[in-house]
Length: 143
Length: 143
Length: 143
Length: 143
Image (cartoon, rainbow over all chains, first blue to last red):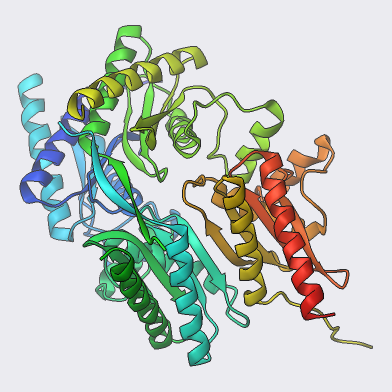
């Protein structure tokens, strides 16, 4: 019987680099954002609220990251009739708001990123820019 | 690199005067209201529950103020499919109920006012009366 | 009557630089830490949890930052008979654990930093290193 | 059998007058305060956070008012071994921090006032000034 299994954990150095990539993308777009990165246990790893980003987006961006990390899928694709019941059943932590993307390494979930304070399209675009930067850096560091 | 940026804070004297303007408008209308004023960080600055106003409107009026302060926009204009998900993702603090308006000084958000206990139309009308009084007093005090 | 008063806000660029100074100090010490920075309204601005830092320190480090930002004082100096009552009366957000320091600019509170996951002495030492870096950078950027 | 009994309710006009008396006393003392007034049902009636008062005192001042209103006694006089268990059993709403006083009319509890952000002595002194103003105004209005 096997008692333990190998896994990957996102480092704080990697998380901060992904966070900075999201900040750069948001600055280029001219839309201040809240950006949250959680690990595979849905626990906060890194966060920033940019100048002018919404205070109430602190929670929503974090929950987008949590939802993406727990499902391994982008947020926003749940069927309408499941989205609110799942939010209710998780004290609002499972959200269907767009702007959350999983962070994957070797096909394994290592975390999630959530972006909030702009429109759904803006939030998602920033998250995608950060994931692209993550994947490029990952490929370079672990070829 | 810049570490700090200048900003404005709503004073308690200003907040109480806006609160009193809302009370006067509600008395003139004959509709008792809960009236909340928060600062730009969504923290409570001033509050009153008028005789006969609903107890459960303490929370809803405060959350209208918070939503207006965090977005810089009147409450009630969110698309249907985002209103409840945003409420869920913020523990109910982001609300789409009408009756919340931002308080702006020099084009910058300094807080929000939320009114609740009447109909949506009554709540919004009282909030608008208070914002009008705020803007007039602001122009006079800081020409 | 005065409706608004001038103030300063900590920028996200400044907050991230203070965060990085704390990370560097923690790496030099060899003690992984959770590091949180909040603004003067006790709202989260920046956060990182270093590799190996305690998951439950996410909350305690954030609350140290909040306590320092709301009081303008280092955490840990409350008299015994007030520490737990204040924690209870604020849903645990006011904490007397050492490791929280205010961030001051021109003698005004612009936020707070909280560090948690090590011993009290280690937490405080990292927070002090970050504040020292903040003050040096502030003096250079805003002489 | 009697189904209903007469009672007194604190008006919002009265609550705001007591609030203003507390603000005046705090200004005279030079200590910014959070001041909360609740009715006999422990529900918020009026509130103000003065310029420079602590954000985390929003909750603690309100809970002092609630505690005084529910007990009819000044806060701070509970025996040590009951204070924290009562806080725990009420989600922190029952507090033994000084600065809460009941508002009484004809020997009946009509509410409570709570003051927080200064030292215990300062908080209590402001609350006492407000209660004195309340009793004087009450005697004059209802001789």
